[in-house]
Image (tube, rainbow, N blue to C red; front, top):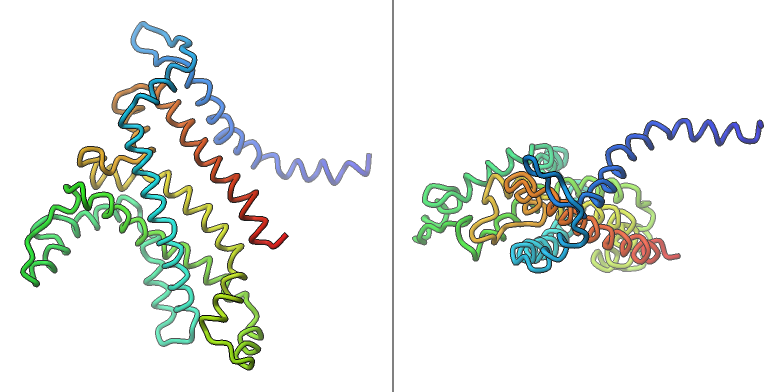
Length: 291
């Protein structure tokens, strides 16, 4: 009995966290999967089992494919840009420069702002005629531009806002990782005549790869769960150019009140994130930790 006491004690310590995880993560996922096989109850008409009909409807839904394509483009742009910018900022503020603490605070400030506040700030920047961007364009004699109302620039504007907000958050993790690298490595490299770029490419960046995996997981999740900026800035327009997958799920579930179809869309979103997570953990994790 004594041999089981440490295990029982450990499980009791994990029980509160495990209960909350099951209640707010696992149970909603299973319930959503179950509801995706039923129609939406309306008035006196109860939900009925429809099998895979919701998924068949999804295959013929052009807005779903537009939202999925937009989200893939959005993720392909925001993830590498945020990570590269975060590394550059971390390398800079890790150096012994004047005002280093103030510079770190300036980079991290966008992260502390609420997403709705960030969206409203940039909404002012993008406003035609009297917004900040058009004021700058006016100095060069350029005409006003409807940044969020044009199909050519609306999604790009969301990408810029997301990178601006997330890069400072990722910078903190890279800064912490850089401060864990022994300074002896840099001294030995300088004695051997290695340049800064060579040292970064062969020493610093490989040592940052575990942090990069952690940041990459967060960046992927953030890229597929963005809805606040879309609601405030574009509402999916113009012509669904900025309609991302989670925003489309929000519209289907809460605007059109089609809970069954929204559940099936949610399962697709979970499947995409699960596939990416498997790739990261079973492929990248091995290469990053050199196993």
